[in-house]
Length: 171
Ligand SMILES: [Zn+2]
Image (cartoon, rainbow, N blue to C red; front, side, top):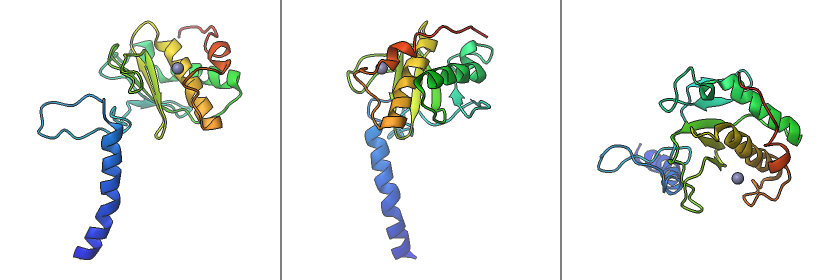
């Protein structure tokens, strides 16, 4: 029993180290001696609702369930609009709404209105006036990563203009 336990332990330990490295810059919880790093790039992988097209959305506690930003069907429509425009089809990623000012990029250390992380795919949008624009913008990063293996962090693709500025109607 001891040898098999020891060999089975090596893989999770490696995964835990990777999770710890990815979580650098994520916010800590409350006051434990050694706070557990959250999966999904330090933000956690949980979600409140899943839409009919498969989008997983976490909005609580940032916005109320009645808020349009908690309406997964509406957010799926925005996602599909961008995907159709780009001509790239991919299953919708996990989308998490966070408070404005909390989305700090590990690349530049600055707060952003939206962030995209790959592997696992995670789209973060804040609750500022830019929420829907951010969702469409980060969707372009996600779709490019899905199609090309490169999310185009320098925004060289014309899709960032043509597919993000499309008008839409609020629900
Ligand atoms: Zn961007």
